Image (cartoon, rainbow, N blue to C red):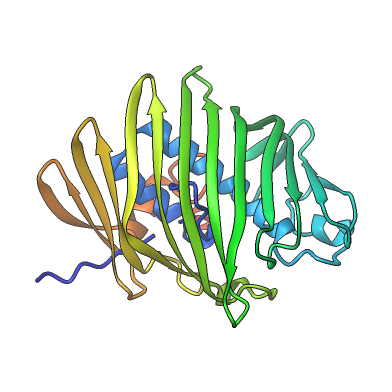
Amino acid sequence: MKNWKMNLVVMLGMGIGVASCSHSSWLTAVDFISTESDVELTNSEGSIDDEVDAVSFNSKGVEATALQERLPAGATIDDTGKDAFPRALTIDFGDGVEDRKKCRKKGQIIVEMSEDMAVIGAKRTTTFKDFSVKGRQITGTKVMTTVSVSAEGQPEFLVETNLTMIDKKGTTITKIATGTNTWRAGFGDDDRFNDVFVMKGTATVEVNNEVMTRTVVEPLLVDRSCEYIKQGIVELDKNGMISSIDFGDGNCDAIATVTKDGDTYEIDLEEERVDHGKGKCNKEVPTTSDDIAQNNS
């Protein structure tokens, strides 16, 4: 049997939240089996998760000024109290702030936590106020609930997403998703590169009355020491037409296997990412060695 390998991010195409270092290669993979609007929403959601995760995980006892250092320059944060729960964090991008992926954000993201996220039953609810990413208006909610904690202190989260995006063309894209994000290692410290977790779930995306369902049929293994999703299979059902991406057998490499329209083929997502400018919020093709180096950072 052919050895299927692959390249990747929570993702997040599933609305479960993928490691940001893997996010651009996840988007590249989604391009092959999905639509432009779906990819735009996945891109926007992933860039939102970057900031939300940065200020909400490992934030107990941390002053708002320290949390602000985790955000892009120009963004501010308001905190109801570093040691008090329920706790509300408001990330304010004002009239426009660019993040590290060159995504321009406006408005506010509100993050409300009922308890420290290492506690079973804790909920983190993310909402938006007059918020947009690169001109794409985002509304809705994303709720993360801690459903268990292992003896080693690694949590499992239930993630429920209900988002609506209106793009610059006026197209409305809605996404309803549910899944789990189970940490195997690295939760609770400041080293993001030792994080290892597994994601499962299903997302339904509707664009112009066309409905697509994306399902993790084999759990996705994310190891933040690797730039790519290391293992798992995602399947897309679009009007009864089934496509899939196989992320490999656990090795850290840049080869994915795509099955679409009855054909199965390997793709090198690193090459596709550089060729098409993936990794940045904009889709401009990199034209200089500096651009390409930045794309890979």
